[in-house]
Length: 487
Image 1 (cartoon, rainbow, N blue to C red):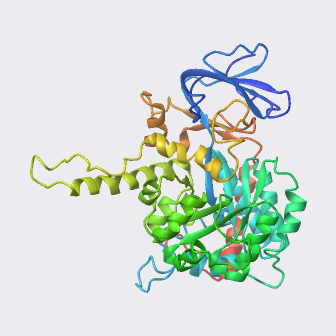
Image 2: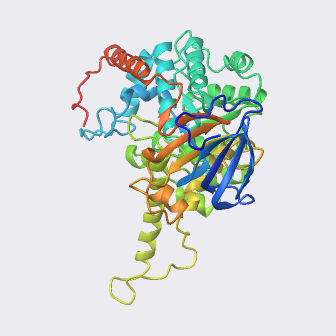
């Protein structure tokens, strides 16, 4: 078969359908598999069949990966996809109005996004915003997401969100969180129906996670956590000191929080942000095997508190990375990795410089014993791939290029103007690349993006639907549409 055909190989991802990704620089993110300056990856159905410097597979389609970096798809462990129609609306905004009277105090995330826009979402708004946001991340190489879906005003809203995740054609964990509490809302009890109707099997592209937010009150979050453990679902919740959650986490850490025996930290819990939390709560998180997702750009911008990167290091923990909200920042993996690396290195570098003086020869001191190690590009790549898979309980399927795992793969163009000549594969991905370098994206063996273009997506039609949804949301929320008013 010809290499690098003009159109993508057909019927990929189906049982028995094989193709070869040939000649790329393969970064597996699996220490046992290793990395290869030049290697082939054989895909059979939805799985990775083999990785080797040269694979003979007569008669199969060949994807020419020369000049490309071949690596696992990126994983985002916290994204509010329903907010896609509100992109960049809150570029300056804080979490809540701090009374300063500045452009950052009005509009704010709680006051506008949650309290004004969210209540006017219809099921069709949930569908198009979730679908379009999912396709946009897929285009950027994010093959797996936890959709923290806080828009469940009714079962119809819930079904629309799940249908959108399925129609996007990428791997997703559907986060069943609360809505606005109206009479027709069914959270959290509707989890029983959702689990049975949509997620009777855990062996599918879209799986389910149970949201159990502390700020909902002890009775409600206890009920949600209990249902999650009854249904064998992972639990996710925000933990933000700036949102008044520190005492709640301390109570839970001391065994006082919640009602009922099924409430408590465990390895089935993913906590989001963990900014401003006490040392004791952190120790309990570590000892209980809780996972932590950090949203470095949003935490820095919206005043959640300093991203807890050094605390995680101190306790021997590693985070996964998440984008949080497109109302405020881009959700691509390159933004997440670079911001996390530069934030941590800024904190450590400043502490090292403070250990010396400003007069030679002590102006550039060696780090004192106990100084945290600087993050490397390998570290943040790990956070953005295999750590994300582990934190979503999907590492048996994805997160690394490992024979036997499902083929969630991205091909990144290293011949592009912003990268060539290639001198370091991990260095190029983290320090130089952006979404324009994402050339081909594969999910469970199926090619979803080919040579720079998404497949099976009518973006012109979908963009029109998204714009109409946006117009409805602004109109129904009584918020003025003005392209220059909120900056």
